Amino acid sequence: MRRLPTGSVVVGELPLGCDLCQRGLKLVLFITGLCPSRCFYCPLSRDRRYVDVMFANEVRISSVSEALEEAHLMDAQGTGVTGGDPLVVLERTLEAIWALKRELGSDHHVHLYTTGLAATPAALRRLREAGLDEVRFHVFRPTPALEEARRLGLTVGVEVPMLPDRVEETVKLLGELDRVGVDFVNINELEFTETNALSLLERGYELREDSPVAAKGSREAAMAVLEWAESNTGLNVHFCPASVKDAFQTRLRLYRRAVNVAEPYELVTDDGTLLRVEVEFGDAGALRRALARTGALACAVEGAKLVLSVDAAEMAVELAESLGGAAYLREYLPTPGRTLVRSERLAR
Image (cartoon, rainbow, N blue to C red; front, side, top):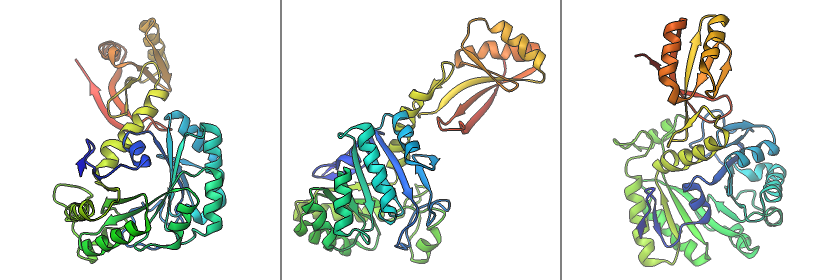
């Protein structure tokens, strides 16, 4: 058993899809929110849960071609096709896998999450033919679909949340999966979200005191399962803490996108955000005079704002004071629309 720098704990080997994810190299393609299951712990947000929508990372999209654009912007080396259950929209999912492999190459690793309820032999065969590399089943007992997927040459895993009071049941599941011969098992820390919090509380689960999302006891239960698996199975087992998503997966993915979309006057931070200085003027005349004084500095005009690099902060303050404006240090996400995350007024 070993602990990774991200906080994940692994018995055996980390699945390739998880390795790409933790290094920010994976595009997250949310293909649909539709799902035949009604899991009480489902963490999806209200704008995705049981809604037929598509997202590529944080970007709402309407076509597979837009997903490819996002993959290029972040230099993705792999894609996780998720939902909902992607097999509910099988044709769309097949189109996406074909397109990813065609556009990004056969080495672009694609894995898919499914409840397995629609994982018929025919569907699995078509997924394999499209280029799918790995399938992750959300099941609590072995099913024929797992063996069929293995027979087709897919890497096969099972991924479940760690319910704090289900150690015995999870140990039993791992024993059965070891006999079936799956390639790995992922155990996720149980998370509280706005959509599942009431259901979790009704069942007696509590929020961990030192985390805004993690369920109390989930981590400890997972460690007990991993210790059992290390001594009693030959499985690769990965415990993924709730903190991994924000601390590593999302931050590193944003950083890769930011490097590709940053303007010359924008600074990419270690968190994958964009920093710049903005001077807001009350009239067009002041803006024109400010432009005349910036010289060869890299800058841009957005409406009544003059945008400059962080290095030009002192000049921005001088322009604001002399021409009747206001200077700000602003931080944006590198997403379409540049979501503002911080605004600080600058002064001498």
